[in-house]
Length: 72
Image: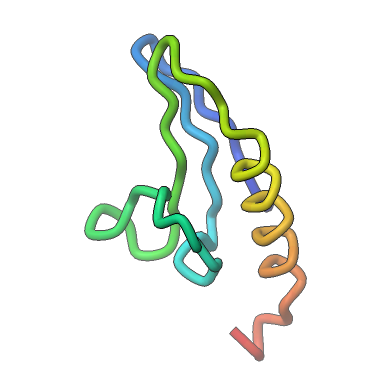
């Protein structure tokens, strides 16, 4: 697994299990201080999804997921 979508009544998360190892140039991911590794984007009702940001983070997480455990 390299990403997840979590639907909740008040918002939606696009999450990344190894998010702490990802580049986050816009600093939009949440989770620092909450989890050790995972990071996520949160969308509230009515928010517009920044498709470029979401796509770039999915690609970045897929890159991180391919790094061998021994190199992490």
